[in-house]
Image (cartoon, helix red, strand yellow):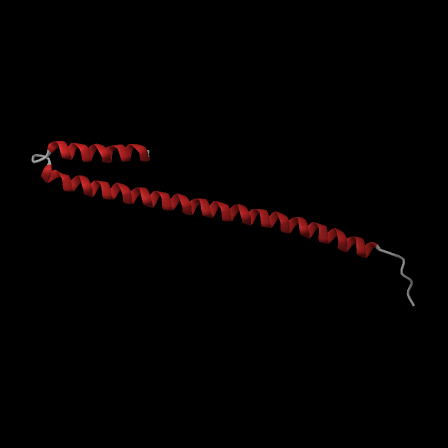
Length: 92
């Protein structure tokens, strides 16, 4: 029969290894969270840029459609062009 004398150096070694492993896992988990947040931020920025590009493209098309009317209804063209300019200014 063996006598139980309490924890020995192997038990302390295992405990120390477990503590180190927990610290490494925590650090890895924090790094993964940071990378996921950075990726989400890049995706949001990409979506915002695409939306802005689409808006500018649509406004350019709208301005091009106004060209035939500049001699017929210059005040109306001016109003619409001013609104488009205001929207573009707010996008800056």
